[in-house]
Amino acid sequence: MIYDDWPPVMFFAFLVTGFGLAAAVVCWCGHRTIAAGAFTWWTQREPLPDGRWALKVMAYESAFLWVFCTFWGLLITSFLFFEDWISDALGRQAWLGTVPAEVSVIAQGTIGLGAVWLWRYRIAFLTIRWSNF
Image (cartoon, rainbow, N blue to C red; front, side, top):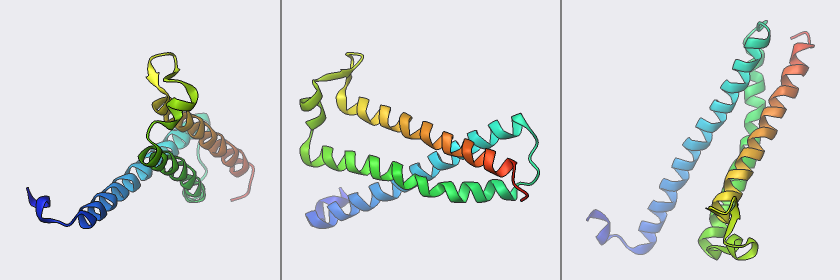
């Protein structure tokens, strides 16, 4: 294999860089998906006066993407260094008795943060709707 000749540090750097780039693409896709869902909901409720405000809201809300990246990054890093510490702290099966605690924490945290993000889009929609853009 091509990687057999690489020093371990080089292979680790390659792995971390690849993971970082993949995570950035996944986060960007998630950001665009949540924005598309919010804008679709808005357009079904009432017509948009102008699309420029939607782009400004999406650019403003992109800062909230750092919350997701920090949440996932801290959990993944803690799993790499401390392995299954959440299962040890909460018990082996923490969610409906079938899913490991680590998967449960990531899923519930992601769903919770997604709900907060949609709520933030709702507030932005109400603010923009009543402004003279």
